[in-house]
Amino acid sequence: MPKKDPYRLGEEFTQKLTEFQRPLFLLAHHDDEIPTAGLLQRLAPRLNVVWVTNSDGLYFESDLTPPEYAEVRKAEGIRSVGIGGVDESRTRCLDFSEVEIYRLLSRLHSGDAKIEEARPFFDKIRTAVHETVFDLRPDAVFTLAWQGGQPEHDLTHFFTMLALRDLEHETGQKAAFFHCPAYEYTILVAMRFHPMYRGRRIRLRLDDSELATKMEMVQAYPSQVRLFDDFRKVFKWVAGPIGLLTGGARNMEDFLAVEEFGPVPEGLDYAARPHIIDRCTYMFDDFEGVPVTFRRSVRPIVKAFVQARTTS
Image (cartoon, rainbow, N blue to C red; front, side):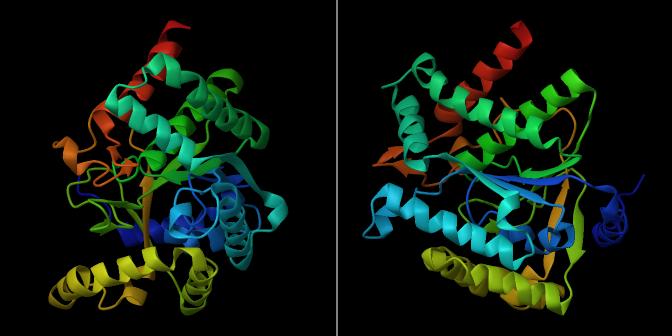
């Protein structure tokens, strides 16, 4: 059976949005809402937004300490989603430090720490996500795609999956589960699933007002100017010329006016490498010069929690 057109699926999805009474965005970082800021607008004001980390990871690009930088980032996130229509009272930050997460991931890679040593820290994240899901009882959850682009994105997805599985097991409530691509291969494939992705793609085409609001949300993150500029450069030299040849987006605004996400495929093997070549996963990610990889940093965490569940 041929797959449905992603834009047609987007139209059908939009018509059914009112069926979601308790939607939840469960994200890793403040600014992870930007790729699907149009979807956020359509779900507001029923939407809750939860960020797992305090987003302190790039503190070294400023003159601030990690705690000071985190406060800047958290304020930016609240301002961003507020522009999109989500009141601050419907936001939460679980406040886990990116710096500490990366420190442990790098130590797992280098062998300076074993999973038994790192497990208690990640157990706190898993518990916090679990408690959040059970408290909010969402009927639809949107999280980051499992795609091997950024380790905290993948871990947020993984812990969200575990929490929703627990919710269904313990209460019988099954939430619709969607994932939203951020980037992979550094930022070469941004805000879209890669060309070989076999899951269902849903695409929304934003109207002028929604796009204008989305661009205003981008401006709520002055601390992230460099990252947004990097994306603009990649688009100019790669995606833009391709768009001219294929009839796709001709500029970044055209690109941002389309949002892609989809239901999380059944049976994802979270212990399997997201990319055939491990070096394509978390490219150039490191902590103080020590790499962060899927095979040695993230997969041990995944296997520890999957094994714990199957033996409990």
